[in-house]
Amino acid sequence: MSDEMSANTPETIFVGNSEMAKLMRSYDWSQTSLNAVETWPQSLRSTLGICLNSRFPIAIYWGAEHSLLYNDAWRPIVGDKHPWSLGRPAREVWSEIWDDIGAELASVLATGEGTFHKDTLLSMYRFGYTEECFFEYTFNPIQGQAGVVEGVLNVVTETTYRVLNERRAQLLRNIAAKTGVAKTAEESCSLMLEAFRSDPLDIPFALLYLIDQDGTYAHLCGSTEVTPDSTISPASINLTAAHDPDNWLIARAVQTGQSQTITDLPTRFGVLPGSPWPEPPQEAMVVPFSVTSQGKVTGVLIAVASPRRRLDESYCDFLNQVAGQIALAVANARAYEEERQRAESLAELDRAKTTFFSNISHEFRTPLTLMLNPLEDALANLDGPSPNDREQLEIVYRNSQRLLKLVNTLLDFSRIEAGRIQAVLLPIKPPRPPANVPLRQSDD
Image 1 (cartoon, one colour):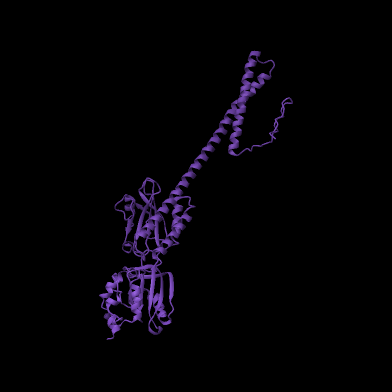
Image 2 (tube, helix red, strand yellow):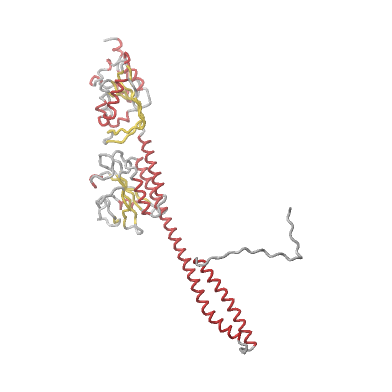
């Protein structure tokens, strides 16, 4: 054995106190395709020294089998496959995405040309289910002796949560834009469901229920999919009957005012529609919402989660924000409806007032006319009443005329209010001052 090979020991190659350095020092590399560490070339040892001492996520795919080595920062990317994945061929570790990366790794080895990807989707199986993941990563060639490419350096950043947050924020913006024009609570729900259909990756299937005034029933306002099966989308739920089927836990959500999580959707409903992925959805969140400050539940959102994302804290926060948008939209629509009804009531009251004025004016004019005509005849008769009686009759006549004028004015007003008469406005010249009053001089 040469002096160089004898210097290749786990202690000299895997330097440092990191978790991966300690694990690699205790690992039996002779059982892998990499063979004993004493045989490792200088290029692998140098690259591994950079990898283990870096705080950035770095992995090494070495040799024709792309055997996997990685540091502490990269370890979360492999998920529950660690530590089984250490030293194994990439085809075994990443069998679910091998069609995406296998040819590219081979190309880097063959051509020596690196690659770069930004926010690329890789559907990985890391935590017991196929997961929607996004990464920004590079595959860079590692050159050995004589310039031969012997491995691939993988520098990577997982951008899953940033991509998901941007996509979900876009959905929230779409919801706000669509529901801002709603005039009724039912229209708000319909527009909300329409917005959901634009993002089946985050909300593959949803139902919306509104609670009646007395809190007895939850009535279905709609769903993102046409589901004639009443088991999946019941038209109404009796919130007070314990024996009625309620697989969505709507009554519990309304009574407690707390969100409910369902984790066995296939058992309860079979395969639900709407998901763009081949796996059936497993989880759903039932979120009650209120449109008043009293906290009384006025509706329930049922949002089925993507089968490729777990209902973690971030996902639940997003669905709570969606429910908050629904509550705001329904509250605005109901406020608009109440204002419209109030305006209609005022208009009806105004019409009744106008009708009242018109009717009472006619009722006053009839007896006044019947009174004035005999008075006019009596006053016109020269042989009529005595001078004293005539004076009294003239007083009655003048006041009757005055009352008739007031009644006619009231009738004209009611006609103007009803739109049956138009006022004619004419310019009036101001009166000239008396000749003996001097005109006021301007300050100029």
